[in-house]
Amino acid sequence: MVNEKLKSLNENYINQSWQPTVDDYREIAPGEDLMNYSFNYSRMVDGKVTIITGASDGMGFKMAELYAQHGAKVIMIARREEKLNDAAQRIRDKFDYAEVYPYAADIMDPEKTKEVFAWVKEKFGRLDVLVNNAGAGDPCIPDTSDDELIDWYVDLNLKAPMRYTREALKIMLPQNYGHIVNIGSINGTRPLCGSVYSGAKGGLNTWTKSVAIRCVGTNINCNAVCPGFTVTPLSLNQESNATETGAAKKARSVDYLPILHKKSTRNVPTFPIDQAHAALFFGSDLARCITGQIVNVDNGQYL
Image (cartoon, rainbow, N blue to C red; front, top):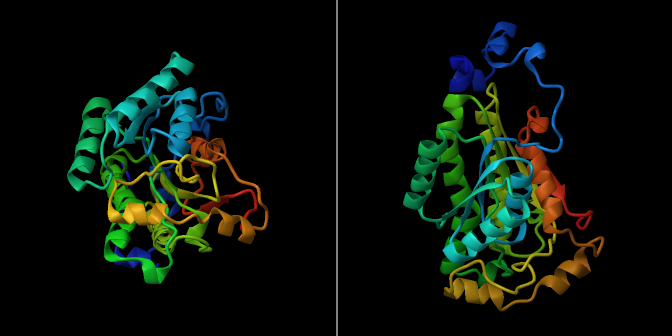
């Protein structure tokens, strides 16, 4: 169990008027003789119960596929049930040992969110990895961002990952173990397209660091992978990740890719597998001592 002084992160600790001792750390950290130095690189997340949102296509699908390949029990979250089931079956067909569990849910629904985590806890008894991947960008400038657009994109890109993280911590803190991986965007630190999207992803970066600070002294870490332009159906404007609301239609009406390419340092995109590799690393025990980090995976596009 986590040392209560470290777990509470009370005001005295935050103000550094109390400092943990060596004995405090010994209570929460494994001894060197218990650490696994023979890491299995072919099964990097073997047996880990993992939730991945937005898992029916694009980056989320590739993350689910890669996690399953490396031995995780993957709960795939997406809204459209038929498409999600098809995606899960594609993974099973590719890896006959894959353990994938499609769960149709709208991540913006607070009650459905609680239902997802209650189901995971009942079925598996634990949660090892959360990958907050689901998201969508808007190409609008600040003065064209109406209330409907702001509400929808902030809810999807920021509030939903916050809720999923909150529910995940309710499981991870008592078990004193977990990896939280937020999929942000380079636009969260250097806005290029999508004012609301950039603002939400900037908030997700700060949220990532806040969660990491909360989990100091535990075996839980939180990091963010920030893609640059990545070739997915959504980024190519081939399909919408939103419901057909006015906000979604408005966002789809603007082609921002030429702007992005013009302002990028290198006109070289990344692909879903590139983001999946980074997410796999942060969900594995190779990253157990890395937390609060915002890592750009953008092929140098915005240098």
